[in-house]
Amino acid sequence: MSHSPTVHDSFSLTRHYAASPGRVFHALSDPQAKAKWFGGEGHHILIRNADIRPGVTEEVKAQWPNGLETHFKAVYFDVIAETRLVYAYEMFLNGAKISVSLATVELTAQDGGTTVKITEQGAFLDGYEDAGSPEAGTTSREHGTGFLLDALGKALEG
Image (cartoon, rainbow, N blue to C red; front, side):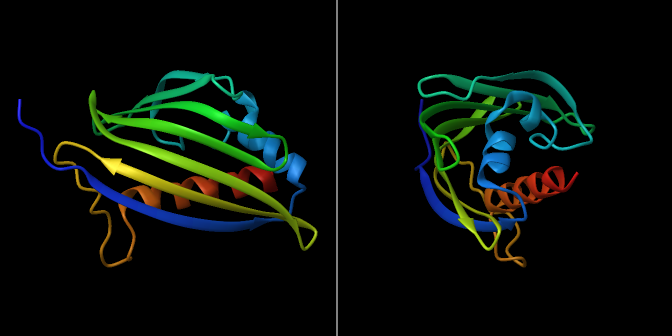
């Protein structure tokens, strides 16, 4: 079987939330709190499992109204309360693995709230190119991660 070359990409995004590092970390690491913002609206969750500790996995599989099925499978390597999460994850579209990524989430107390910086390094596989939105200057993955960070912010406000 022939495979297309792997395409690599990386990005960093930063958001500031008017919430303590403890509250932000809870929203990132507690399964019930994370379910309120991670995965978005408009689709049916097929699988949601999370145990955010080193060496343990998180999995979210969803069916979208247009029939698209997305599947996120992560393993956590470093979890430091109120400070950092490091995990690697596989992403699948309709059962086909499209990427493997390393993500680092860093939390810093700042200006009475918390600054969150996420850095992601991705390997896009077998012809999947994360072209995204050239007019917006972002890849699909970067746009999606920004969307999730915005959803996190809304959850922290509520």
